[in-house]
Image (cartoon, rainbow, N blue to C red; front, top):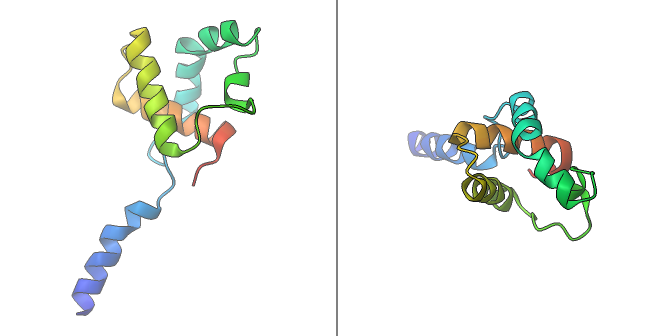
Length: 100
């Protein structure tokens, strides 16, 4: 029984890990600045960060942030790798969203 409880606890641990915890926020910021910020700035009168801080922002969860990054990547043809998307998510979550 103790072994079963230990295995269940071990399996459950990743569910409590912070979203994007395996991403590199510094690398994500560099990618965001290079690949995304110009488009965001053009849409928000020169303030690229307003897309993340506006009252009516679309992203309301870690899952929706990950999906938005993937959608932008696909729609704009940025050809970012999944680990690049994870890095961008790590930066955005740490800097703006603070999802747990």
